[in-house]
Image 1 (tube, one colour):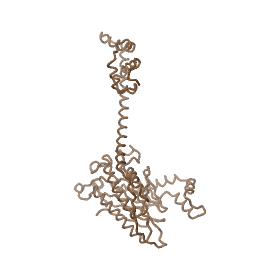
Image 2 (image 1 turned 120 degrees about the horizontal axis):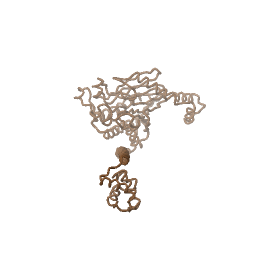
Image 3 (image 1 turned 90 degrees about the vertical axis):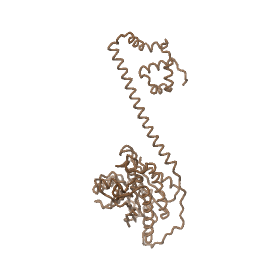
Image 4 (image 1 turned 45 degrees about the vertical axis):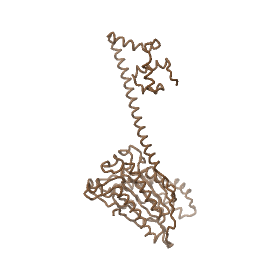
Length: 451
């Protein structure tokens, strides 16, 4: 648009000024000009010029009456008040909308800056080649197995100071890093032990959330006991987990990693503000997958839902964090049973025969092979045999009324300010590690992480 103001534009400006007052920023969009341009035009225009006589007639009349001390009629007063009220209401609404829009833009900009910082710091690790791995020979009658490692509730960034908890607990970034190394080294030693009798070439890792302790507004007392900001928590977690996975890769040719997010890692002060996957744990998993993309034999499953289903040796494991299970002062045994039954019912209702045949056609199984066809149908239609969850910082295993099993994973932390002060509990920090064949769990360890 030309910088020169036409007479019609100036008339329009005069009308808008009478309606809204000197709201130059609000009027700028309407005129397609800057607020400063509108202000300069208004101040520099000779409004007494006859070109604007019709538009300023009412203003002059009102001003004249005021100068002559001639009172306005009641109708004129009401009209003026109504006009001023409408203009003021419209101005308030517009200002409110502008403020909300600016808040949304600021929030998006902050998220973009965080993501840009994380993405810029990630480099793809070159392929880690391991040669001459010693693999023993196995008797033919010994069936192959796969191992299963559960990692949850690391709470990277949490600081538990011994003096503040009576010497019962102690946790910080350095202790987390030591415990992660102990966990991976112990898994390697146990694997070597069981390989003397069975072939174990695949490791399945279930990451069940609360990898980071979260931002200042996540979790009870979070801001009082956090030694790192959320950005440093993310980078520290990624570094430790990358080292752990590459260490395990020296022992296992194939690693499958199944992920779900936790409640401490959510973005937002309370549940429901953002979607479930808008979560710092989800970011850590995603960037781990990106940084390890060149490593052969490492696969990730990162759903946007708050649960995941892993199929290992024909058996199904439901993976959840556990924060949606109600509890009070301990482990909610009845709540766990109810939740397991509800998940089974929900997943069972999502299946039908038509979907099963579609999956069967994609599987490549020969339809004339009755045994394999029956096994496929049986495994497809059942929901899961095991439910694994973290969140409660306690290890355990219970058999449910439906014949399934619930496996509870502990934490890296042990006793902290909340558990010791409010629950009067302090569990030994540990993580689950077990083996699976096509029929059942074969071995099981609670790997204690304290020195």
